[in-house]
Length: 290
Picture 1 (cartoon, helix red, strand yellow):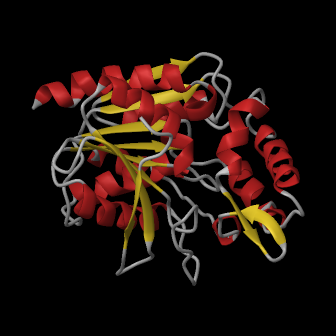
Picture 2 (picture 1 turned 120 degrees about the vertical axis):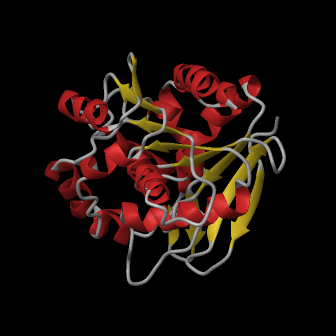
């Protein structure tokens, strides 16, 4: 299998969205992956490639609006409800069959907001029949939101060369993901860079940092009455025990898995363990149920 799959673009209404499609062809059961704030679709590629060795499915890796090769929006609109509308568009175009949604960090908030829209009958697309939530609290604490707001100016910076840009971004990630290695981050960050006349910077709208206000997702959890896998990276400082308890209490049908040694960037630093947990869950709770 190649390092990346076919890249497709979904046009409006709404921002132009970039998706990377791997695995089985149209009509196959589809896994729709959403990444976190300031990330891009590449964060999920190692896990998706491992899953496709075990499951005969289609994997769709989305660049969220304002990230990667997807369009920025003005005025900025980068919160879970906004991302949920984009996930609906992607599902309508690329998931005509059975659908499961998998989200990391802010992507977990997004896929849950999308699943809740489907449960309320507000989405014109296939409804997900399984969900995986990876490493974030349902009510993001204020210190995390303020951390992003404070970094909005720094994320705009350009660097003279790619190596300097990558090293600077690695240092920023390691502030909240203590223990994640440079080796795990290097290729991911490199593929998320763009070159302009001013130098190298990330493919990312800094307004997603400046305006992020994710709110409280706990009221939506009871609406999502589908099997939900809740994953915490054991060494992450982003997810708390209280947050995991709230997730387990809120989702009607949840299973919890902890990834020992994993940081918040668990899709990159422990892809094998994460893929193993997802494969077991998806086989038992999604594919085998018809």
